[in-house]
Length: 397
Image (cartoon, rainbow, N blue to C red; front, top):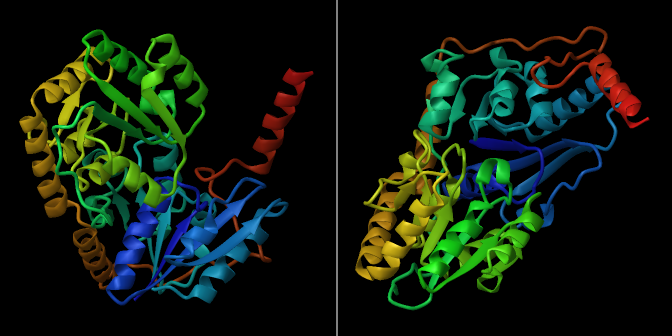
């Protein structure tokens, strides 16, 4: 089987992690795998060279897209050269726009990684031209099932590979080490809450050190917040790190914290669990509670209640046997439910079922004088874009 993963950049994040984890597993199973970066504009495409250490990578990039139809044509040509049996799309508007013009023998499977309107709306673009949409959590599955029939929606979680280093076995050492891994974005991740949690623990004389792995628009605000709370000397900010460094850093901690306002599943929770690191996260129905069973393999709290997070950390500091129990349960749970080999089997089973479906399209859309249209769900019309830019210029004047 020849699989092609499509994403908009090789930047560090969930789409890249999903592609690398599943792609490497499929290669181990004897399949051909290509990652296709489809992007426009002058933005950073991410670390493509490091991605090439694991996968074959192709790039379809255009700095300025003067004629959308022409760029879509380039995407179609690139996919035809790769000649995949399956196209797996992760939040790629341009590739979604190309779906009607691809050879009909290619299975098309968009994967929805989050519950945001933007991601769900993107999948709605050209929805008649994909075979099934994959939801990575029950919460995402519920959203998709409101728009499409059950036979077009599948729930397959993201998976994690076996770690490249020993899992945590020591839980009695002091100080307690707590980490956060992810984007420093207050609107989603509630990262400013972490300074308050650290302050509450400091007031109780709980010896904790904190490592913040990642970057984002609120890094400066977060650094200021921990200084303002008087706990700045207990924090280390590492910035963005590659997969190997993230794994190493995470493994050095007892606890991973995720106080997000919303998540699709919280991939980082699984990555912590397989390293024996105990996750403490916001209780989000159909998302974090799909990964963590509260009190069994981690702890779940209210995102708006820093005191609950502090209480959970303080309790595990006092009872290291409980910390070790949660760690062991977390490790067993993630191996049983989210091992990448299990997830790969679920994808291959889905591909076989879709291939034999009698409902599959047997045609491709023809171009009219070479013109390829773009649905409004994927991107605004040229006129709408011009009006928006004009308004911005007038406001600036």
